[in-house]
Length: 195
Image 1 (tube, rainbow, N blue to C red):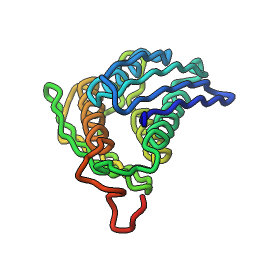
Image 2: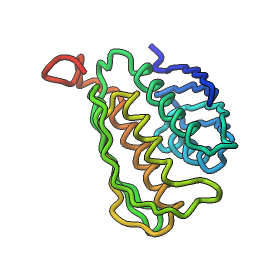
Image 3: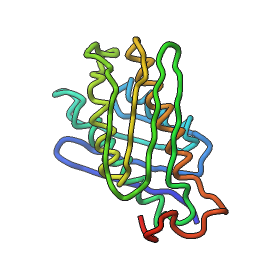
């Protein structure tokens, strides 16, 4: 059974289409109208080995907030839908990734209990035209709509671009580990029998 999902979400502020294949090769076709965020989503696909197609537009003439947050909503929905009944998945994932002088750790649990713990002091300096404070909004929306407990902790870093890359690469690797199927896991990896 193909573990994939297609999401199309339209509001007065955004229009987003997502196709996610969990068991992919890391191929990405990303067009969000926000060049830096395109780069982050390409990293997510490549380092998580997901195939990801995203076409998105929105009221970026106001700012990028609505589009970035709604992308988190759509990707969270896509992961939840692609996982189906969650049978056979590892459930937990963690990764620590360096990017030059930056080091970031991500731990997550596909628990059905959304929670974001986000300790990433990325500063206020823009990356190109992108406001790095929006990364926290993306991860919050993703965790809420994916039903995922997500901890993102920056150990250290100076360059905002490097910090963002370390966070997304660690997130990708942790998500890949948690969504991976294991023939050692029969049913749901929970003593309750449900997630």
